Length: 192
Image (tube, rainbow, N blue to C red; front, side, top):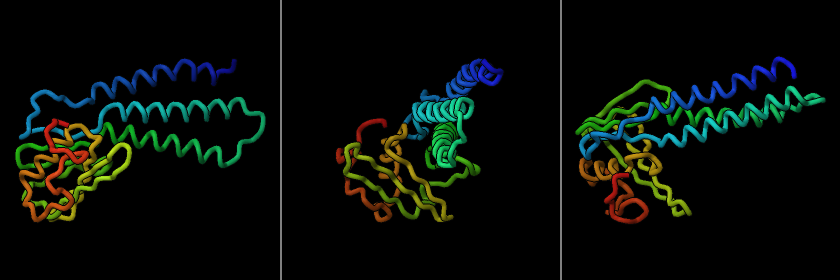
């Protein structure tokens, strides 16, 4: 066994434990959330899926590099770097993206850019898009006076609260695709 395999065997579990501890510490607190003050964020399971994708891509990549007898094709590098990149995107989005609603103020923390905020009065257009597929995916697109755009999807925690708050606070003339229907064509009653 060479030194590279030894270090991978020792350092891989340590890196996994470190990342899981970061994910656990960065989880949002669900206590003290109400319809006036709440946070919309991706479930932490998305970060775990992304982390698993990154680790598997890295592990296969390292195994092939160390144990392959012939030179690897460029397609191999392209495929596994794409897999690693998609997993990293999921981890970053799950850990970084959040929308904090505190009464009339909406504060958005995007994935890579700096945090910005606006009020419900700054909203100029809201569109609700629903796809009729097996998962009945849905999202809300919010556009503001300053040109900012926010997309909140129904897979995110507190989506239902955000949907109800939009219906309550935004003028019905600015709403498109709502037609008094809730998520999955039912009336909104859950907490999301």
